[in-house]
Image 1 (cartoon, helix red, strand yellow):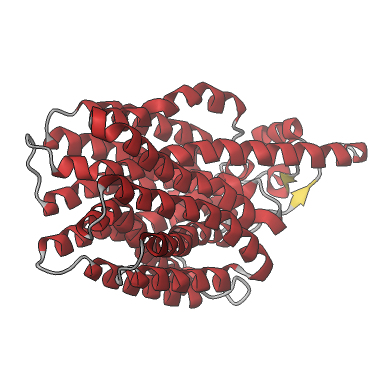
Image 2 (tube, rainbow, N blue to C red):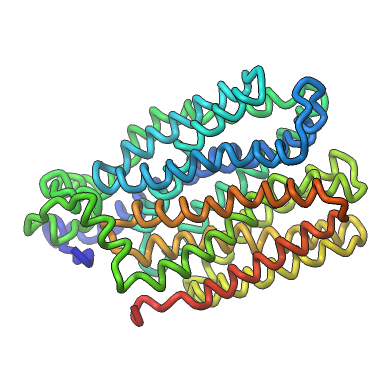
Length: 439
């Protein structure tokens, strides 16, 4: 199966109703996926928010390298989780994997908040990563599937803005609670998504693409009739369920090889930036002479502008093309990061952090949506999961790079030099992605 031809379910008089229900379904899917991605963003951002407190914890006595490793524990789990959950969701259903992943990482936040030692902290973060790694591939597939063709990047930008808003929320919660209550309550708040599970189980529709690809034509037709949307023609003709060989064979086919390399390299560099900057920015700014409150506000500005940037870049990508938009965004991010090496007024630095957030997190999230749309429909989750799992090797590297530079006898500006160069690599890799037509 290489396409998603559509036929209309129901009689002609349903045409207007189908359009209305489709719009409602799009809104619902984007909203629920946004909530899940917000939760993931909070989980990722919370470590950067509590890092100054962990660094001064007299009981744990963590070195800069150990602090960098704290962020890597989660990413190790996410690396495995993206591959497993992305592939399993295309084989057995996207909605069940989505709900299971959300449950797992929310529960692990409780364990992390209780952790009596760095070992328990690391183990709980690693297990939480298994759930975190599965959220984005499924959310990407559902959002792209249930979005109109001319608004895929825009809707994806709105959905994924929850990630940046979650990081922003972590920074603000950290600023409000860290000084008086310590880091544990800040982490515990990250378990709140568990209350959303019944709502998501009730309202979130299963993927029509997934039902068709798994040969469940009857279930696909019933869901399409309930939603008032089009059902893939393959469901009517009787599609055969594909197995894991078919999924992996499509992802790693020869015709996709060069595009796969470009996407993977760009996302590797992009996630290195996201995780490296998100974890180390408050600590770097503290070393640059700012107090704890101002240092956490830098992370808040970084997150806020990246949330806005996702929506803005999504609009531009739909209008001017994804490759051009994302390439220029990465280049803009590189300029903003490099400018932070030259200390100016606090307001100028806030502006440069805003540019950095706009051009790194925003660019990476729009590129992830483009990847989901670029792939054949029946491997959206799996292909996105594999790409992001490879990219998380870069995400693992980001916090470690920050920790390594912090351990050297060099100024904090070297963090910005290195991260700016990485943004340049992401721009080049994005520019080289073949068009879908050329492929």
